[in-house]
Length: 79
Image (cartoon, rainbow, N blue to C red):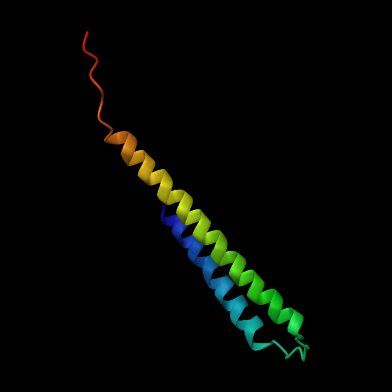
């Protein structure tokens, strides 16, 4: 177990050092962002929000149905 922790920490340290070196050596891109790019970014954000809302709604109904089935009253059949 200790070997795994040492291995992970070694990899994590090398990842942090690599990220630091890359972030220091970045040059500006001087890129042009036209209105189409802003529209794409806004559309992506709205799609993410809509997807999250639908997913939460589906999970909500699954949980509600689970508890309804769990606490459902059983009908007694009298003959």
